[in-house]
Every structure is written in C-alpha cells, then in structure tokens.
Length: 273
Image 1 (cartoon, rainbow, N blue to C red):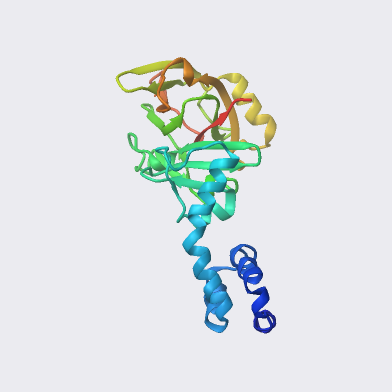
Image 2 (cartoon, rainbow, N blue to C red):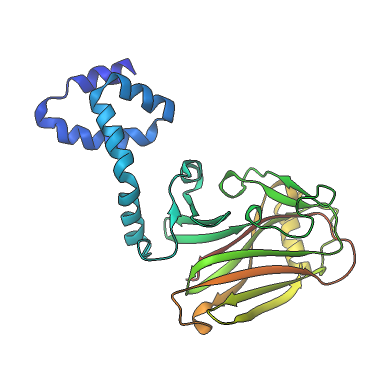
C-alpha cells in the first residue's frame, strides 16, 4: 500500500487524466472494500478515482452489456440489480430487480436467465421434515439449493419473468442421491403466460431413466455436484407477439408414492444457436 501511494504521488499534472482512468477501471475493481477505503484516506487521486468509479460504473456497465449482448436494458422490463457485488464477482450474474431469485448471467458468447428455487414457495418447502436447504460448490451465484427428503405430494414451480421472446434451450440445475425414488414420479410442464392466456407448450414424465442414468455416469455419487440437464428447446415466438413474457416450469406429483433424494437448484434459459 505504501509503495502504491508513493508512486501515485509522483503523478504530474500532464498525466492526471491518464492516471484517473487507470485508477477508475484498472485498480479499484481489484481491491476489496476495506482496501479501497484505506487507499481513499491516504491518497487524493485514489479518493477521487473511487468516487468517480462508483458514480458512473452502473451506467457504463449497462451500456456495455446492452451493446455486447443485444439487450435493451434501458427500455426493457429487465432491470438488473447492480448492488449484488458478490454475484457479479463470482459468476457474472445480476439479480433482476423486482424478483427474489431471477438472475441474468453474461457469458462470452451470450447470456442466460435463471429462475432459482430460493425465490419460490411451495407446499412444505419450509418444513425440514420434507425439504432442507443445502449448498453445492457449484451452486448458482453462491446461494442455497433444496434437497427433497421425502414427500408424496409436490407442486413446485420455477418462474421466469420478463423473458425476451426468442428461441431457448431449457436446462435444469439438479442432482440425485444414489438412493432416490424419482423415476417417473412427476409431471414436468412448461407454460407461457401472455397478456390474456396461459399456453401449455411442453409436458413430459419426470424424471426419465435416460436422465437418471446420465446423472449417475457423471459422478460416483451424483449428489456431489449440481448438473445442468437439458430438457428441451422452446420457441416463444410461436406463442406471442409481445417483446417479453413470463415462462413457468412446474413439477407436479404424478403418483401418490413417496419421492426422495432429489436436489433442485433451479433452471435457466439459454438462447438456442
């Protein structure tokens, strides 16, 4: 810290603009909050740079993301919450304002929209006799997932809000215990909500033997890590002319048998290429 402060004091007037930008965009993001506070106390350039960085970074980041990923973040109902710095640092994910657990994640070649269980409520979700919260090393944005201990009746939904009307691949983030009872125990539905109607666009038995076998092959115990399992492709342009719509993935008990051993983190939509 002392060495950096000494070097910054040597900056002459001709180089102020250059070093201001250096501080704004190259140094500030690499220090934690405590370090930035200390630097701002001992060096006026750093103090001004930090202040300017946090005044302008939200607007500049929105502009950059809008251009790179062809998203109109200014006019869209998708308003990303840029105060969630932990998610930004970890997985380039932003909580969508007005939701409890809808995230948008920016990748090198596109983006994903997430709907996570920790933002939903369903029968007995808060009763530890039936469900319990758990954490995975690859959990979405550092949050908790849910472990189904045992239920006979199930009515879980994952809701995506303000989804841009496009063609998407649908993925579940899930895992299984070896001693599970999930094969063909549920019905999975995907529903699109438009201005005046609900359209059931997909329905299948869940979870099928092929998916279970693929989970088992990836890990000796597939509950060690969450897996991204592709469910299907959906083309929202077939069902609405709106720019955005709501999409819901729901799970409903198909039988009255006990179900157990399922870990569910959530789902995400990824633009189909």
